[in-house]
Length: 251
Image (cartoon, rainbow, N blue to C red; front, side):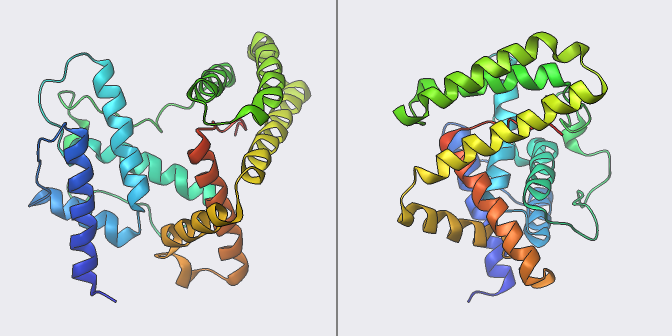
């Protein structure tokens, strides 16, 4: 087993390589303050896949602004990485003594308007916005062919329910709104169950190993029962990612 400095260096190299690919081959070194930032993520147990998802989220927003002006540094992705990590922790049920923060000032480079980044957790989606996003992502997943023919009937039914819900979600209150939220949770579970059942045992085993890797930094602080729940949630998240399924449930 490698020492902690070796593990941190490998972690930084993986992120540097991924950032290079996202920058169309332009190499941006993770050194100096950037290395301190990324090392902090490694020390806090932020999974590599979570960092990559945060980088992807930044690039998606950056591309929407038009032609790129310059290669993206990892520092610009900080807010998105921390947002995705927060989402990951909530999804798998991992808690921490303190939140992950930048080793630098609270006014970090990701706050710069020139970087084009802003925290996505500061603005909660409304229920109608959530439903619209879910319908679009289900349609995109079907168009990619990632779901397979067996999902067609379920997707049709789910999409029809979601379209109906969108038409009235903004005006729902109290028990009626809670009933819709409960139905979304049930739909989400049904989609996820069918996705997992479509995978063979070898694939599920591989996803379970990936989940164990994501949770490795937190396992020693968890009870066996808590780890089992977190592992199951992490596998579900990886299944969702594999098929490009949105989170239908609404918090």
